[in-house]
Length: 406
Image 1 (cartoon, helix red, strand yellow):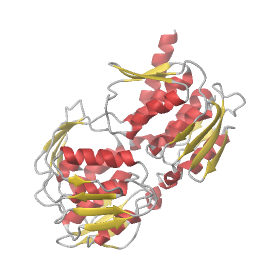
Image 2 (spheres, rainbow, N blue to C red):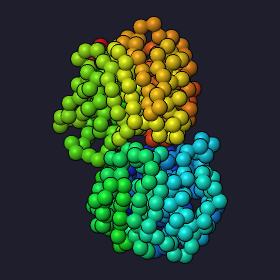
Image 3 (cartoon, helix red, strand yellow):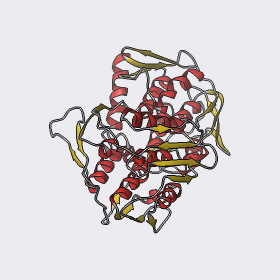
Image 4 (cartoon, one colour):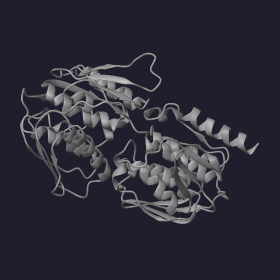
């Protein structure tokens, strides 16, 4: 996104190989961005050349089920002027969009719907800078407007009105990325972000590993009684996924950062804990998987907004854990899970678990399958959203564990 908005070409190394990335690349190309991917690249290298002017896309931009595409790309399309059309997967029509589209309307964009699919008609010059939205259902609405704000004629004076914004570390990540590219941002007032108009500097960058994706592998090491090391774990990061290390420790596991990476294992039984995931709600399915095989209850709170993610994640987690015999119920803003202990004694074998077209629910099923015999998943293809090679990585982890035992 920032490379597409920059004032010169950039090279990015280590781009995530996943459907969400492919959808983002296709969306940016549709708006006039040149993105070159070397055929012989082994490190997922891309060269991004921003256009002199973005071009509208009336024939349509496919958002799939990617929140980043459906929310981050429309503000760029607004810069293009003219008409652009956005659509996505069937489940995408249920994902919240109205706060972002309300913000774009305040900038002068005309819209025909408050969710996907929608058509937007943008004026030759957008207005502003004052925009007020309710971003209590997703931090992405704030990030989406901030990413493009410096390219607006008057910048933006963005105000949040409503309940607390979830996943605030994601907004902090956005601000850090903007400032590293010379964008002037004033966030001294809580719930208000003022971005000055100006250029976004091009910057070559190596992308950090996806720590939220890595969490399910660390959890596997802990639940299996073995250990897993994720290499290249950053010592300092703005990714909320890094909180998995502290969560593991709070549940009785060990998580150690060394030169080799982050290593996780459980010296004894896991125990339940009270865990507020408001800042890292993407970790909820993995934490639920850990809680399912802990001793005692675990309360997960601060995640009411994930009812509007790829699926209603709270309802899905409750249904799938209940289907194998784990006692769980929803609260107003989370879940209470009564763990079945490390061996899952008495849980029902041979169950087909549902993914709900949600990659994180597939990760949860994989964790359950480590302990409960006979577990199957109805749609492993859902992992392609952020990790198409999940199955081969998972199998390789299991094979290496078996080799170590032998």
